[in-house]
Length: 431
Image 1 (cartoon, rainbow, N blue to C red):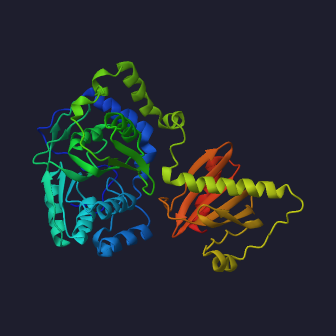
Image 2: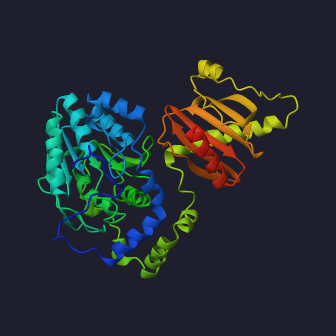
Image 3: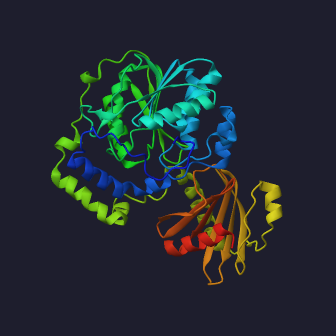
């Protein structure tokens, strides 16, 4: 099996019988962060838009069928585009990757186009390493792919880490897409053992940076490595952390303050409290804020809410006449927005064009057969949304958002979230 095949939500199982047993605190942390982070895990099923995937295939000269299945525990198109960006910018001589798969193929193809560089990829699954090597050979590229069992321990970081051997002394680009969070939510923080080898101006890419565990990791890295600038980048459904090393040499990591392993020193009372959240995922979701909205959705949701607020102001002004005609052909010709057809029985109250950071957008206010007044917002935007509507709510105004081809759509209204989501599902089905 390779990343070319369809996979489930969970990562591949580690069959290494010699691995040390997980500490009970590791198990409790997985339970607690599973309760808090389930929206990101669910959203990770999304691999990116078809357009983004086509653009990626064109950039690295891959056949459209080379990566038929993305998402789940594999990289999405946003992260893969970031890898290509870094390769094109750095023209790296040495790339080290933790967690092989689709990213290995894309990185190898990007480096092949540059005509230089070696890619060293490490993964804990021996069978997967062998299959991925054969897959790359079939695509006409090569990489130094090695099996690195999860049997090592890194001071200051919980969980099991890769047994890395023969790592190059100087690295231009570090790609971190493993180990899986199920080992421990903070496990990828141990990748900092490689940061001392990062060349001046070198780049670090961490996948899944929107998850709570990786946010903790990013916070520690910023404190441990002041000469590396870490910033969250947009354009990935799961979040990408980009680190860039300044010029000059960094002294040994041991000379910087180390943070105690949270597994060893954290209060058992706190761990037990976090573990209790596992039994109440919805409570955990509310406790840390609305987690159902991925970071990439924030801009679109804000635009939809602003357009909705503007329409509410217009309705209170007698001099502003509403437009009750919805000419979908005219909208398409003028804006390129192929506004969806409304379900039978829905009547138009107002249709307006609004400027936004996404370009021209359209807001149509309608009344449902049940007498509910809601607004449908549409804009051309490359998003990480899926075809199934997702929900967010703020100050009594709910927004259900989804994607149809090149369009991002948001249904906005002062309704119960469950009802608005139900109406959005009707629109998304086109029934």
